[in-house]
Length: 202
Length: 244
Image (cartoon, each protein chain N blue to C red):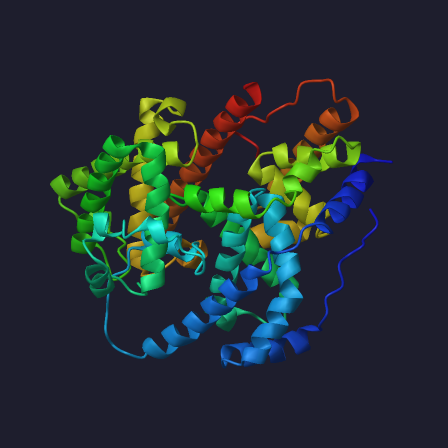
């Protein structure tokens, strides 16, 4: 697979400098770090959690956790890798929380009234085959979807994904294989019913 | 073109249309400012209890655009903002109002009568955590008397149906066998115990490899059960929505 990895704007050493400033309370460092990470974090979260409002809430939570965990960041490792790990864990924790998906009905209604822009998930439903494929990724179970997004959107190797998710490589391979099989069935033979994996995906 | 290549191309193309809402930056900035304030306050030896489950929800609520009509529903559970502030770390007026927003959503979905019952259970939970929990509200269940342990288990059992309903999930009790459901409740209590023993604020801070052997095994087993149940509930929900 060709690797079209998104360019990291900074080297690890440069990130280290900005992070040290951020820890020290430098507001300019906040601007730099947010500006250079927000698209990446938002997109990763949005692929894992399609609801737009929930995604924004989770991104906010990712940054809250970032402030608290900056001390633990090891500059010897790639910053984006660390950030992606933090993001995926935040999404997983969010899904697990009691009350995790309470709907703010009033707020959602207000958004519906004041933001008539097409939602990304609505755009997916425009009937184009390629959008159907993205939608089908969204139909995968969360565990399978995470692997697919990290592999085909963030372009991590399966070994890196195992490291990032802190699960065995064999589990990642199994989930990757199962995800592709489900996507191929639905993508190449869209008239067949979609398969849903059993509870044991290991 | 192979599925893999198509996938790669389509995800990139789709991602190009995904941009964070502009107002998000201000929310994140405020969270950074709050963090800096809390850092300076942490030097104070004052200890307060934190109800993690509630605080985590509060943090997910935007700090702008509070609905004026959401009122002070937090009072339903905490009594008053002043009371909550006295008891829980990091409870600001903004987080309290945010919590009220969450409750307003719950109230609308549950209806008046069921909401009253929902509030009663939460109040019971808050009282229990305040009485038995550590400074973060986590409870070492192993140290509870048999009676208190049974009470906590019942609270979890009582909260689950409303949580499932509000999360738009299938009812956990319907998805699991009686034995599995009991295991699920026990797993939640084990999780509490591990968090209380390790003294962490968030479960993400638990490093399984660094736990004592007995605690590590219990923690991993509980985590596996919770993950599996979440997956099962989610799958049942997906199947239901597809079949609609």
